Image (cartoon, rainbow, N blue to C red; front, side, top):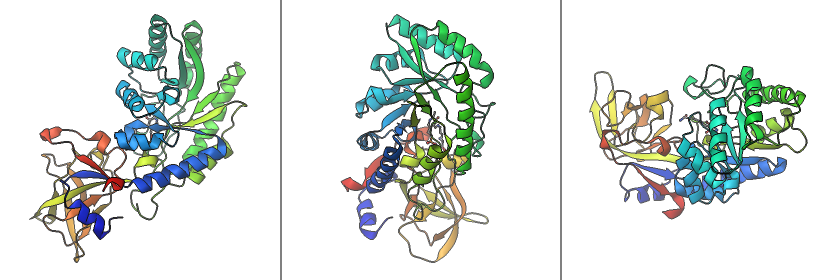
Length: 384
Ligand code: LLP
């Protein structure tokens, strides 16, 4: 991934920074485009994974729409070339102001997560003389078999509308003159690598669709969310997820009614692989039973290890020395600011470059200024 020319280029850039391999991103986008064109599926890129304008602009050129979770994401999407008619908007806590932003822009669809939310959207749409197109975000009670912090589709989660509320939703919709129901929306979690989970989701959607059909409710759009996982362990072995199999599952197991269109909200699987967080070793320090490699990047730049015990492959890209064992940590005043314990790395010293791989999704996007740290810059392979 990082040849010597690239590492030389890194020497002039202040660390830490996010590095994006734009060729890999394009290869990923090309595969997604080919596979979705085969079936006529629609992609809305999940902006929350990475809202970097250059990344967003490139994705948009492939004709994808945007999946947003805040008013600011809608604004960013419009600014980076996404058209309103391809923007979907989810979130359990849409504020009045955010709903107005979305109505003003004329987005394709609100993915609604509760009855009070539908009532508010109706009220605000009436006030502004608009009709809001909505999908009901359904909690399908399908377990995604992923980390419990990123599981969203089981009944105990705060997301979506549960089955026992469907009747009340239909009653609400009947009274909501400024709402048009156009779809059903699902999203059961993230970093799902067990593909049988998606088959299970398809079968559940088929059942749910029957319930609606029995009541003569036919919607034109089914949105199955995102969630497709990536290979964090071996980023060079599998740099692009197996989209052929992924989309094939939906083609095989999901029963779409005539005229129904299928939508996806992919985030991680689009951008995770192309990004690495590049940092330098500040110090190597002896602990009681271990050596610490202390980096100039920490949980402020890449929160996932501290928050979810997530694994990002750690590489010393400067050294060819003999392997040794290190605890790789950041500079932040928290013990959870640790990227990996007992990591085997080639002999590591001050100023070596360390790459934290597969950091393009939920990396830069979740950065914070804790400890009043600077926000890391981003660097693009096609601009070096
Ligand atoms: N659609 C909805 C409604 C979502 O909530 C999400 C992610 C996506 C689509 C995109 O899912 P993806 O394709 O990226 O799995 N910060 C966590 C991940 C949180 C995901 C939240 N929702 C992490 O770093 O693992």
